[in-house]
Amino acid sequence: MNNATMAGEAPTLVTSSQTSAVGLRRDQRRAYHVVKRTVDTAITFIALILLAPLLLLIAAAIKLDSHGPVIFQQDRLRGRRVKVDGQWTWVIERFTLYKFRTMAHDADQSIHRKYMEAYLAGDQEFLTSLRPNRQEGESYRPANDHRVTRVGGILRRLSLDELPQLWNVLKREMSLVGPRPPLAYEVDVYSHHQLLRLAGLPGLTGWAQVKGRCTIGFEDMLRLDIEYLARQSLWFDLKVLLLTVPVVLSMRGAD
Image 1: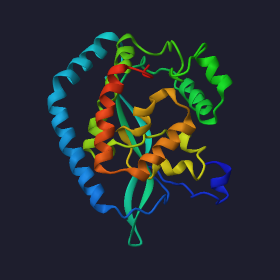
Image 2 (image 1 turned 120 degrees about the vertical axis):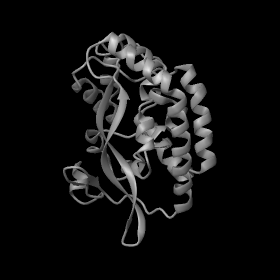
Image 3 (image 1 turned 45 degrees about the vertical axis):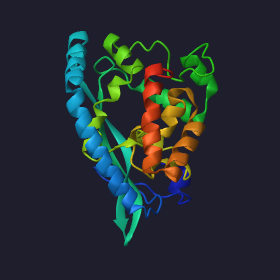
Image 4 (image 1 turned 90 degrees about the horizontal axis):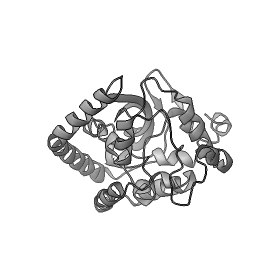
């Protein structure tokens, strides 16, 4: 964790072999979370049935296009709602996130780490070096990433690489709507305030995604994630889900 956390100015992140936990925020909205979980499960179960032929087609295309597993697995951190001393609060724990593999097998992951460190720090000079001639409204991600396969590039533009996270939703590790789950090394540099974006289940889509995806800076993403957590309701979740459709179809900020 960062120096502020270690000094006790922010919650201490306690790490074990499987779980990291920190008290984030009291949450008394039990009814909302129960109904949200029920709706997530119902929609996800139906979606997996309807999308089964597409999922199989994507899996076959990945296999034919490049060597390696179809599914890419990655450790992420998520918020989980638990009862502590009689009160509901949020803790942080590790889980395995699933995606369709879009990069060459055993691709160098240090490139993404350097990008994320620059993105979190707002290092515009370094971000510009990764994506020269970036225009306002374009993605911050590195341009012409040689690690991305032919099929992977298509999946990213259409956001189809995220579909295996429906399994994460069915396992109750994620929700359909919520802040995107970060990597551990991202959370290592979070301030106390930034940790608040983990005070909720991570989502397959979210308020920050429909408002800009990868085209907005970290501080804007943080603001939108915390705004969602403050405003979240079943109607707001439905709004985000409906707005996700045109955003995905536009392919803006997806690469």
